Image (cartoon, rainbow, N blue to C red; front, side, top):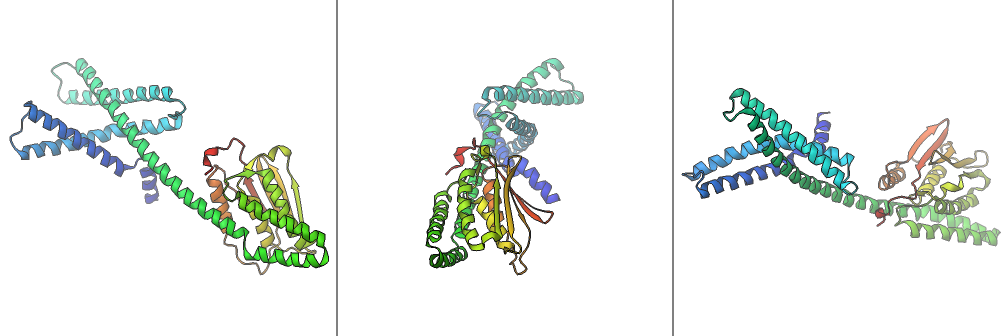
Length: 364
């Protein structure tokens, strides 16, 4: 629990990187101020030790002050990121963020000034000191906000680049796994066995089988690099896939699709449906006495695939790799992920459908 809390806290405020930034700024600013004061004669130092002593003490004080200022500033930046994006509402964000920055600066300077005045009253008079300190704090906090915004942008850009590279590697791996699973020896072997029997019995059906078989692999090769395809394209491919399976299983495999026409333009990752149907056929008994019934329908914008459960006794334990890959593919393109559940002896898969205003910049 402690490790989780610290991880979440570090995600919100990367303290190590922030410490390095503020330490560099504090040291650099103090070095410039002390050097300028010494060289200009305003506050000359008589030895290197005095210089280093002033530099150390000043840097520590500046570092503490920078932390006190930066925490509320970072909170403001986080709040603004969720409320006003730079690219969409630039002027609004600048106005609101500047106002909050000034509120923080004036509030902080007022509290500090009142505290110091309570310890030892200012000879100049409290009102004038409050105004002067408020102006100084405001200028400093605006400059600090600019620095922190630049730093925050750099950190987020670095995170986005790392995430993009990670997703690209995962996507390449997923594409490889999908392609490997589609052109696997078992599917090829079973299909060729069926085709061999058809050639001897029904030449016309054998030719149709070859056409559908070619359509399947053409679709795989054409879509494997695409993040999404239309539901209509996927269903067209599925009809070819089910045709081959029904040639093999006959009436033992029942397949029904009930979808409104307005959903056909919706999007989903290619071969999503095929994976679900393949798992249903692979892990369940399919014979005349126990037919496997697969229904495809929609529910509140989700594509639902439902089949009766009649597990094979000798069926190998599923690794779940196909489902994990499918979840990863969805995670790369939308916020929703597939759902897998068992209800009343039925296995149900719910696949999110993506609207046609899907962000095309994801296409690589």
